[in-house]
Image (cartoon, rainbow, N blue to C red; front, side, top):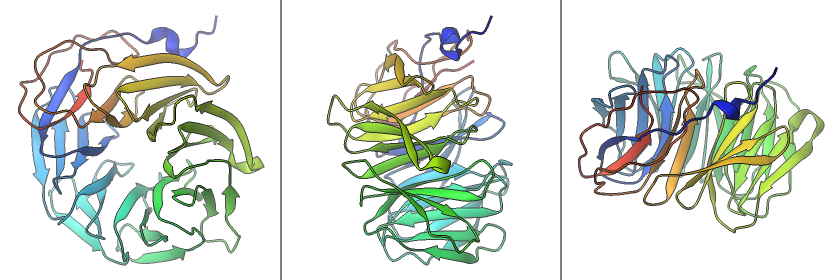
Length: 328
């Protein structure tokens, strides 16, 4: 008999990743789930062991807050977007910056790799969506149409389309390397702060209007409007590996888990002492991680989400910003 994925969710302790010296803006798992990447307002990126919470490396080079970070699909590269108007591509093995991308004229708020690892998208305060060739750092396309800052981006699973969300309250879906006008999805009443595609082709968008909208881009249709009872900023979204479950974080300390086939909220998870900023599932679907702005964390027990029973061990705490996750 079929069981919904949420039936296997269990509660366990939290592990802290506590070397940050500013708000944690984004976190990303490597494809093998062994490494966690975080970026912060302290202008640095951090690599951690996802299982032991050991700090592996710190990457410096940006001169302003790092707003977004992401791994390539093979895990060999990662990219970062910063308030300093640049995008950087880094080598995980050599710990060197391989390319500095400098075409933006304002803060860069979002960066995403295509699943095939060939292209990178960035967007920012200059209202532009730029497509880059990863290997050379060459700019391939300059997509214009948004009338305000671009805050979020996501590639489709086939790497042929990219979605962008803007302060103009719209989502645009662009077909790459085709001279077709972008599909514009309207309905949000506030800035579109986060986006993600599922493997099933659905697109989720989160907004400052307090709602998450689930779209069928192919049909230009909104399937569900999730939330909206509280006027809080939706900060981050993440689909599970099978595309059946969506995690969302809004302004506050709660992570919500949604069934995207019915629009029902399955679980509400609390654990952060302060506002949560980002969430991401591991590629294997067994773990959900969220980041916050909490400081000076004391030893305590809290709740998080796991899809299998794990033994967890907390790392030593240090002053600074924290990432919390379940461990194995």
